[in-house]
Image (cartoon, rainbow, N blue to C red):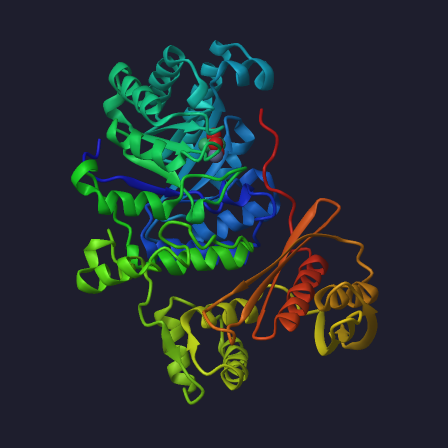
Length: 514
Ligand code: KIV
Ligand code: ZN
């Protein structure tokens, strides 16, 4: 067992994607996977290959591309899932099948309707099958946090004998309390006779706000893999947040005595990427990556930090990527400087056409905004690089908004080259624009979320808008950015329309348990 290194297993693309509304397209997942590889996470759980053709394609394209991290697919403990996971991982440089079955009395009795002995046999069968297809197999005891310790020890011993090399004990429903969870992990490691042949892992959900605390407690008890997500994304209240775990390990090495290989300077850019792709804004007071995480407001604190940074800062903002070259480019910057900065930010454009389109957008933005920051470039590229055909394009927008009058919007769009226009009123300018667009599109989708986020400081900041739409179980997140938030909103709405038309959207990836 690795003594001093904690394996960072990122499940943003699988459990994170199970956040209602956070589903991502294949290309978006690949972009995040590349950022995770650059962050040097050890394992990327890329998806749940059998859950849909789209998820299979995403896992496969990540497995085909990523070289430095292990790429993993989730699979229930059933043959079809395991075979599909193996198929998606066939070209992986380093692939892992992660198979699971529930082990708590409540899940076995009411969900699986199986006897404990049957559960053990099914797990053993699944692990053996997975081991025949892939050298690296992880086994999870779903709802481990509410499972009986004797049963956990029995099934884990058999799982290790069957060939699982990582044993994961998830707190699936976020029920655990740190000292009690640590005790469970410690007991399992002590009592399972072949525990030395596996790495013990934890996967904590945040229903009581304890996911990070429980994960750290488990590390003190011997866990050497932590499953976590960027920004704490995940089912319900989310998973343990990667940035908090990694920075706690780094900052409190004196207490925890372990390390990770994560390149912490890339944390902020990865957080921003995930937030802009999913449309889940990061709250300002979020540890590590929130806008206020390193902002000192009180005079006493500011004075202290100026005199000696460590008086009020336990880690440096730069160590997680804040302020590093924030001021990026300006109006006079040329194509080469633009391309170089994108490369430094790890943003890859597919070809010259994409570079040209992004550069044209950059010039437009530089005309409106004096200073262009890295965050602007990231938003600009997210806006330009899209894996959908632009069937619908915005050509004209006119909105009137006056005190005491009802706002009115006139929009002109091109739908497959044909110009269409509509005028509508609404309770506000954005509402009027959306009504006008829906008047033309007639899609009948439900608007599930509308969010605006200022990308940088100052009133000349670009607004980044996310529009989440749902129709017949399909959910899409449309994004748009502009210094004019009404235009950004129209762009986001149109992006969502294009995603709906293209079929890139997909339903919530989770499928029923066995
Ligand atoms: O929360 C959970 O139990 C899971 C497992 C599939 C690992 O996500
Ligand atoms: Zn989970």
